[in-house]
Length: 428
Image (cartoon, rainbow, N blue to C red; front, side, top):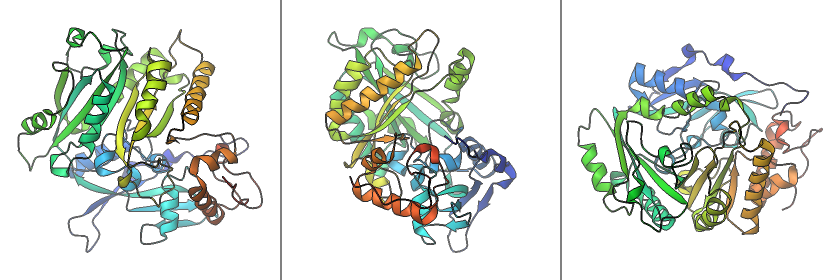
């Protein structure tokens, strides 16, 4: 990614003492965290909750990622449908541009740079500091999972949940596909929430297919709102059309819930797969095409699983600011599809998995699906132009010419050729 160049270790700028609580004059009770771009979201979580009882609203599933890194891409998780992605939850940035200038920007000060950098893949500047809005941290989380045999029922319920009014909505909605078998990684054992619960396959109908679906929701409970969150969660789930009896629930602390993926990392480190290549594929697929994607990709190409999670859950485009550099599908409701493979010993070779990822993308294009690659990687400028679409590509090129005309930032992404100035945009 940086042949003949430099890689910046942003962690060197992430000392805990550099995090500060900010309460601007005239902002009422509003509170913000000023954090280094190289700070991990896990560090922001522990610092905010332990010292101030406050936390950001939007997270990623895995918290050992840098603030600047996720803001340069999008930053999504189960909270995104309600609170927006992380790029919609930042008030101010400090950025070093390709000109070598250190600039502070926000929606009201240098807004073009601010929005360019958010989701800008590191092409316009290096995020050295971010100001993140904070909110009262929940005390506990009511965490539930339910199982579906019907993909149509699964998507109908998921989309209904993410479009509920705030007073009738969960705080977190995710979901995933899994194999209808006892495979310890790909099958039934991947569903029960930690705590000793058992998946009873006898509750499935005889017509259940080779792939099942799990809808995962969470409701926050706050110290100042001692209402019965369990009762509220049960009432909100009553209309859902999941398989009765295949329900799993737990009440956990807020920090424990947000740190749930750490257990996956610990197991992957023990079995050696953490250090192996991760040929992951992340897509945003419009709701109009998600059934076709499920039939073509999940049920056909991946029906035996991928030795890792197959996340598939909806988000709302209206929660994303269109001024950022993130490329999104056209529809209001779209799904994150995250195929998070781990290369385990004795499994397929990494080249074979990468080739299958290409086959999946080819199938999406051949079927005319409305989709975008999240964490995109393409071979050259023409592919990038198609990724963004005509208007957004022109804006992306204009921003590159404005903030990094010599194309010194992130050249390994193969978006722009190195040269005296950024060339005119490729016409799509």
